[in-house]
Image (cartoon, rainbow, N blue to C red):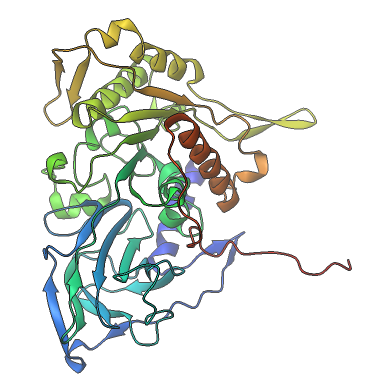
Length: 430
């Protein structure tokens, strides 16, 4: 575990400068330097609270981003988009950005600086179909860092356009496995992002942070668990402590752009670690509270409980998958779908620690997703997390589960989802 913790800290240092370590070697990247002197341009400028801007995921009242893969989406006219990032931006944070359905581009952004992200040289900037008005999307790649939006700029005489949200929404509540830790582009390489973006025409929120337990206790330096923290805007990072101290903002569920139709929960790998000393009883009770909380905030949402994967171990002349809390999770799903809960359902509020019994019975809403057999031992990297391929495999299977269980069609039929996964062999004579 000490080795894991040191690797975690080294990972923070590496990502702070936008470096990707691939199989222990630095991947060659060519991120453009997009920083400009704003005084050299003539812009029409919008404040961060402009109604044309749609914030995806969790952003606080200071317009600071939190958790994994938070985003910003808007439409625009003209051929120019620049963003001024506020003082609470983590320097050198790597962001992904694109127009329309084009491939992701990446750049490191700086606090209190303006970055030109779209210009007349941007590929497809003059195309008017199939996406019209042309959209701009930004996503923060790293779960530990964040940006603060200060201003958004377009060319003089042009304007921003409000883009209506998609009609279906999925949220992921998890830890490092959902946040994308140790995949190439972290949040933009995670299985959670792969499901949300891969479904197409779907809003997706990834409320996940590495090391966190569902049990409300300290786990790997996270002072609170998801049964508590999910109810708040910020995560459990050092940034949150620096900005909000001991008084974080509760998340305003009533004001979020869309209400999730499906909530996927993947929690327990940290609870299951002996170093965190979580009993099975405490784990189950905290998990129940989280699902009660989801049901209270999203009464119509379906909940998917993911079977845990705990890596692999050598087994004679082969390998076997470790599974944590396997029976506990199956029993939990059965309990929520049984008469004890459905006839007298309760909801939970993590900000008040209050349980409330509902006045009417509930319909079954909790489902179980088995991860057994999806990944093999070589789909887990040396730091005990899925490789890019492993994340893609989990995302692909979960998308199919959602399609078969809830009837959601896959409507992403071309735009890039995972970046830099185009590798192939065109040499037949070997």
